[in-house]
Image (cartoon, rainbow, N blue to C red; front, side, top):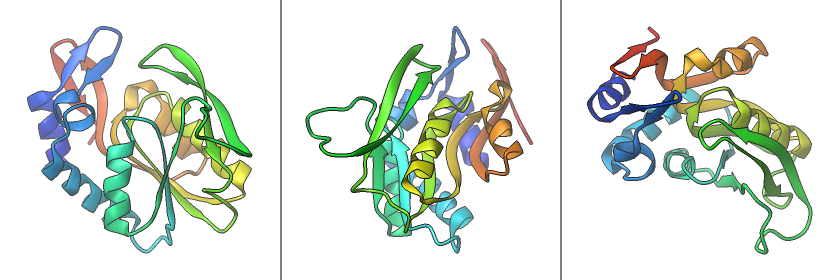
Length: 190
């Protein structure tokens, strides 16, 4: 998606440690017109695949997942990063390490919200080493649901998560694919 590359170059900022800050349009301040364009593109890519549920992880993946859910007219479920008092009953779960935050957490989803009848599209804002998506895939497997694929706003290809998932035969579609980045340059995969 050419517009994603333009937005990253215009508004993105590379921070120490391989972090790309895009809070000005994607995950803190959200450019809603651009969000709608991203959702339309993801819906186009996965239209006709029989998706009946979208799964993401809190919190920065929720906006793009909800936008895609609106366009595709399917419910959105998000994994909570910690079991809380409003998650009751049986859950599916997976342990995950966050590259961005440098912490470990257990993501959980109530068994009431996903099951064997579901064809699930995973949607998230970033794909780096693939830990969050691998956790979501475990939850889909625990539910006996079918994974349709993964839709990502920005993939940091140099961290290998997307390629590892593709090698397993999982469909991964990323709207912006960063091949490399330094403090003063970003190179996109063509």
